[in-house]
Length: 375
Image (cartoon, rainbow, N blue to C red; front, top):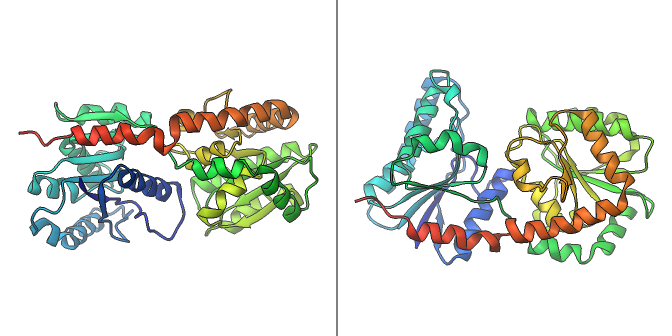
């Protein structure tokens, strides 16, 4: 099948790392591994978080102009697939092209927020409703989105729950060399062999990421009576604010900077515990990556996080934003190394069984093959 793959929020080739980029790449790769011919039709700068209606209207016209040749063209694709749509980033073009070419229109990860009606983002809000109404199939990666999306579906359109996924093989391979990776990290941060290494991997951005770092700093400051080191992988415009949030941790925290994707499996596998407060996290790709490499996680219980962490078995989910509860959960896994190891082992199995690309590919491919344009 020839698939036009569109990601209005962030193209798979975008230079800035994020969970959204990771998932965009994972979906693209899944479609290709299923045997489809996938053409990425995203443009580099389609994100326009512009609150003024006239700015949004101009952005829409820009997108339409860029796709005019495709609107005027013939054939070429058998299916249009759009990943990640919400009121700030609707799909202005996919439904029109799919209708003009009589091909199925498929979306993955769609969020519809009724509270945005009649506000400054009403134009994008209404377009998301139109996108949903035009869809033949919607793949829901976050179950929380389903309740608001489902009522807008056409009678014959389908919605399918799909667990968020990663290509877990490199992480499992890295875990098999855990001792080597751990020794290298301990040398790098000058940590003793028995000192637990805690890890978080997140961009340093204002907003929810910075809020998460602040909760993390407050929580870990309550645990200075225990032995641990915190490794932070990430960079961004809020770096100074992040370092201020973690200042109380002193030399316990080590900044590794932005990491190349191919280096992440070894980094995860060399650590003992993944910690991330996950303020307003949709689900958290890094939580899957950590578990795939054999790390238990402590994360804030919010959004789709409970869908990717098996609470009590592969990690602990304290109340989101509650630094004291977060500290207590981390303390428990620091104080109980056997439990930590058991959870890490369970985490690897959890991801392999439920969240590995291989486990999801047939589910998605069958749904696509069965999707047809209504007569």
